[in-house]
Length: 345
Image (cartoon, rainbow, N blue to C red; front, side, top):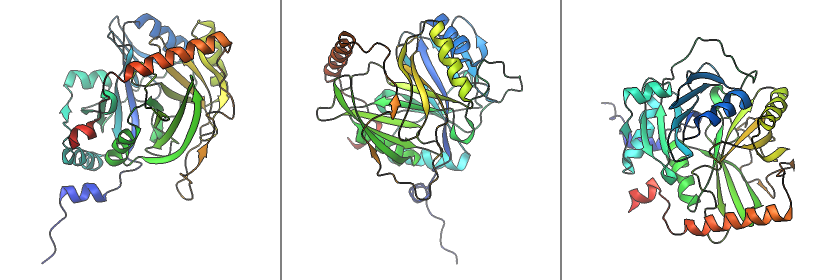
């Protein structure tokens, strides 16, 4: 008689789903709809799929929706969508969440249509960010009309997010235990009067889909929003320089001028979005080749060159440092949410 099949729990612990997960879409809550429309359509150069007073939707490729701006007062990222390659990988993720007591709920049919997916499930992730999971994106046959010639998406997903955390170990565990994220490397960087230690996690061949930054020593969170920035990557260098010029001409403030990172070697700039957090527009980031990759690499600065703030005066630096310190101290007054800490309590 053959042995009985392994339980779902055993399968969830044994099965490696690395490469089965990618960033699919972002949902942003903002009252500045008109400014976001200028930013994304006329500046970044995305295809506008829907434009109304209460909702904007943009495409980057064949997916019907990649970036949504919905009316809200948070001026923050409301949800991120993860595309899971197949029901088997999704089942592994759901079992891992169940084992840890993390509640999962289904999105409504109206919400799924808004996001451009057949259906989705969601959990409350680290820092309270809603993490939504789907397997079937809705595709559009409409020809792309956008100022950027093409974005790098596909198996690597639409880009990455960067977050700050007072509990980086728990946040890293969430992405590694649930989604089999792998550490790519680390960077330490003085920023805003603080020393940040940053871990870069990949879900697939993209060098990182999530970057987690934490202050060294006393754990503060100097960032008002759930994310510090999100990233999109163009396929042509000409798109990078053209978007840089457009955004400046439209009056959007550059947070960091064009520069190059030492770990993923991406050429990029950072621009302030209408909601206050940043967007990184990049080109030519490396794809990780798993064989022989050294995850122990630790770089002493976030940039090889460039990425300087346009206003680097002593007064501007002092103002930035004081603002970061004030927000960091205020973060000590409220706990940071972690689904894993909740599950362990």
